[in-house]
Length: 305
Image (tube, rainbow, N blue to C red; front, side, top):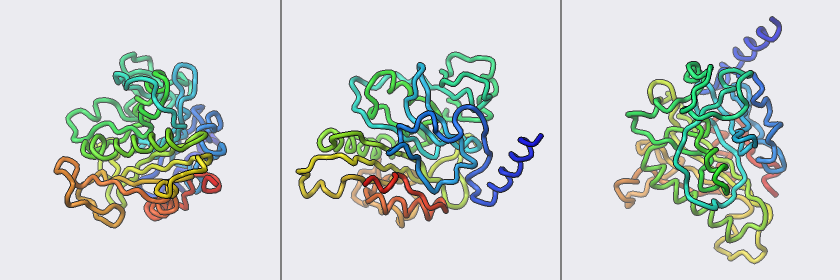
């Protein structure tokens, strides 16, 4: 009774923060990322984000943690995924989409499960998270926050195909402008990083009225990403120095959005026009997130210095 009352009080307090947030989730998935802190720089998750209303998920697959996500259950979408970049040693696997059983019940399996193998809680999955059918007949692709190309082994890449790592992303953004950014970050890592690169990639909701697919899954207005590579070559070319130890980017996911965050390139090809990506400093991204989320977000401890 006491726990139920405290949960009601906490949930009520959240409603005063932001209409996009809500619904505190309790369970054994992870209350504070304590099982998977190694995916964050200096084992410190982003600060300034009120975790109430979100569910930290240590993404576990085949008996090993693969990355971390901060998930919003009522909107059936993650705010961000955090991971350590490691170049893929093979091709992109055939997608077998998965769900998180513990979003349904904390007594369920601690590992993500394929939708192709329903278990006793399968009928309740859609109450707490997105399902494959949500994306059917929509205008959106399944956009990875942690992309498979940034994961080394086939098993690590398979683990990225969980819908708790996915947001609705326009095709012109996903394959048109965002994928080249992911490849560019990968090439920077391979050419200039001498140690680990910690990456946090997320979604930015609409500032006013929320948008949905299937009246269930929240659509972001922008994608964002930032990396931290504290150990890098000492002989960086002058043209590369601004990109280390941190850099960031914001990408448009709505071609009709204003230009105050990401300007339009009127000369872009028709298929990608309106889905521009603006690269920027970490400080600039954090300023944008502070304004949009109404939270003093700090993504990397000590600014990765």
